[in-house]
Length: 256
Image (cartoon, rainbow, N blue to C red; front, side, top):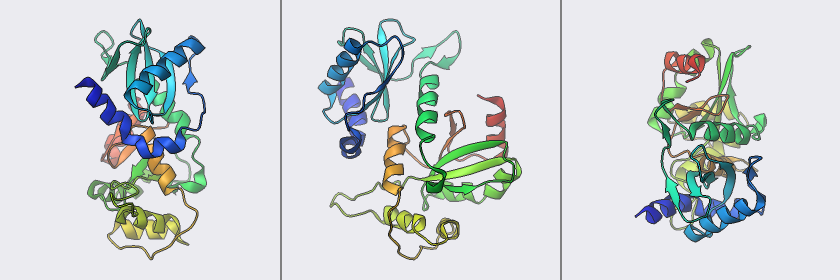
């Protein structure tokens, strides 16, 4: 059952993993040896030949490595025999010990997305900047966007990335309707106007160009996004899905 669960998660990126598994070495901490990297690669390889390993760290749990692979975090024993998936709770600290590793990884990956590929709504002097993976047809995404001016008023800049919930291709290999619509938004002459219209239920005029929609969708999968909206704070923490301006400001101020 565990292997089936792990395979389900690791294969969620099967199509995109093949594209990103370009031979780049996973990021590792100072205490991870080349032998440990090979062991982790072999262990993950037994679960999926297409899963792409992005990060290998010493785990807070003694005797295990903390591994991020194809949008999933797993723990692999130092001998490569055991694999665990799930939250690792420190009852003394009252927190999931995977949160910090996820936040660092997400912050690092999001920093690589150029501003020119985002759709940005920002006040003149933002106090905070959040990244939101969004779908133009998602009800909660539309409700969130209706409050973008209120977010800005609270000093929060909102930077959108594309994440069509239907995925990129249908089972027949054709572009999904939502993906096609989001490409049209990102390729529009006035991208923000097209985005605003789409969020209001108006299908944008068809347009194509060299666009980042698929790349951003794949990035979302890599970061563990599984629904929209998904909000990441400036430090890479997950701040939830639909939230009010007051709730988001409180989360940013508390750092929790």
